[in-house]
Image (cartoon, rainbow, N blue to C red; front, side, top):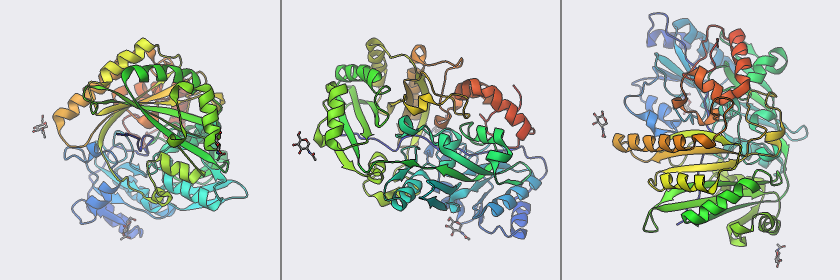
Length: 509
Ligand SMILES: *[C@@H]1O[C@H](CO)[C@@H](O)[C@H](O)[C@H]1NC(C)=O
Ligand SMILES: *[C@@H]1O[C@H](CO)[C@@H](O)[C@H](O)[C@H]1NC(C)=O
Ligand SMILES: *[C@@H]1O[C@H](CO)[C@@H](O)[C@H](O)[C@H]1NC(C)=O
């Protein structure tokens, strides 16, 4: 059995809400939308409503009956329609959620505690690639897969963009949380490659050149978390050069001792390897071998042929035993397809994941290699459960060389790798749900002594985790030393905190 991964990770969170401040009705919001010519919306009870709500619910936990649902879902097609919709919502005192991919691990782009409406950017996914200038303008509802597909096909696979692996994730949430991916060791995170943004502010004004007119806001938008900085309607991206040939590989190993030794060694290899090599590890408890044990997939990509990949890996990591049959050679579009768990490149254009689950995630950073004893004890926790996993994703290279204060995304120098933890289940059954979440918290708490603190325990905002507390507590984990500047910018740009979610950057310390 081969458990190759996964549409992991990195999600979109673009969400905001404000307190309702006037007696308001759905009718008056709908009346306002109609009077302004914003005609694609749906209200609770109408036939299209549940389709529109469900389409981008990527974590099924937040489809459950007890989770608050929006009164209205608005599906604008232009920035002007977004402005009009937001103006109507402001008038009625509605809380706002902006949704593009719907991958928020905590469902924050689809639910809120106050009466709210969703502005869903699903109809705004135009991509304009300029191959000569190596740039692209994208509308804010673009998802990772369609971006990769457009860039690769229009540049004959010579240009790309460094962002996450999971193709249905929205680019806006991705950028606003940083945007780690398989090209990050070579080119940094997605947010490092943003040239311009267009944002609608708390009064409904469209700021067309944020980078020059609001440089502080532009800094905050690149990694400062979703749902705090206005409604982004478009981004301009700097594309990156790619080689003709990329080899992807994945290799499944079982056995606690085997995996302990391989992972121990990986910690000294993966973060220091040439930036053209990305090698990560997915680890999970397994039971199919008869008794509880560990399984792990070592997967990644390298810029070169299969033979060049084998030559490099067999030199720096011979213990892995990579062979030709573990590898696949092709162009970047094929690599992105394989790594997203798809087989046909055109499947990158799908805007909904083929399978969806209930899950809870957490994250850590590691700056000092774990001992074998520490790894082995972590695996003792993992073998107790086959519905959870850990992924180790390497740092080093360009992502670690960019100064921590260059943009809001702070996780740079000294990090060896990032850990993502998840518990995943397929059905709505709350007994297993609470047991699994407790298991996940237990694993995370076991890992505390090995994690990075800056000075709060560091975490990746795109693996958003409400266990980290409110915007003050979580902000210190997500943004480290950049948190203070983010609060100052928030206080100036959005002093009344109209754009907020449970963990958005607060207006005061
Ligand atoms: C609204 O947008 C959705 C999503 O693209 C589309 O399926 C639907 O047909 C649109 N409805 C109207 C009335 O334009
Ligand atoms: C890869 O290396 C093997 C053994 O060295 C060689 O026989 C084979 O021709 C090489 N393949 C390519 C495509 O270069
Ligand atoms: C889930 O928990 C609630 C409250 O504890 C209980 O009423 C309900 O029956 C449970 N549902 C399932 C499917 O176990």
